[in-house]
Image (cartoon, rainbow, N blue to C red):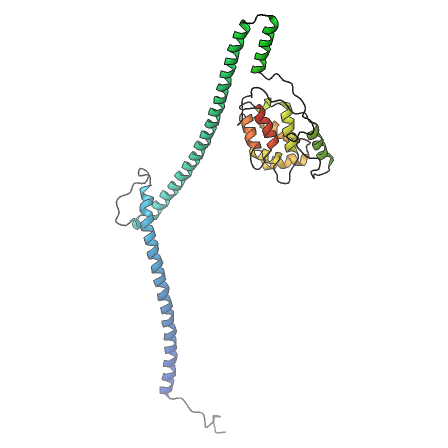
Length: 318
């Protein structure tokens, strides 16, 4: 090996070759930068197109928003381009419009509910007026017949008939056990065989119900405090037995405003007649009328048709 430890075949690169190699590396870097510039340019073009679409939408939406603003609270000088309006101004204006819309919807719901209540009351008052007219006519005719009575037995018969025409004058009876209308639960129905459930079913099969409809129904605005005891017992028996669908005293309690926590607490107490507790809770409300009771019972989630039928037979709720 020659002095210096270098092979004879090793050649030192000339300055021209070194310059060419350096130039090739620089060209590769330039090509990579050009590719990145192309990608960035395409991205910029896409962003410009998106901005243009947004400007078009704003040109369409902003005039509509401005036309519905409160001009006293949000005065605005004429501008050539709505997009030039201050963003904070537009934000506050949109918040105000949303709040106004919410309040209008809330008022509309309240008005609709009020109209429904008024329609119900007008109907009830119409029924009451018709009943008063019929009672007045019955009284007038009865008095005229009584004045023309020729004997005491005939007078007694007229007064007795007049009394029957004005008030309920027939005793409450007990339905026969084979009457399908008032038989609330079938003995073959699959139910839990706990002693609590069996006690409820036994009461449902043996509780007496009003058998004879009255000649004149009572007002639907009658408070539930004055609910006929036999109908109340039938109602409690029907809804105290929990159903897998939930259409029992729990659903009724939710509809009259009992909280879920209270309902769960009552369930843990394992009360024999939870529906009676629900009615006790509700009776302090002025709106606890026969009409509302009937409406709750007819709700699809509860669908207690038998108690609802009993109530509609004795009270003007339809």
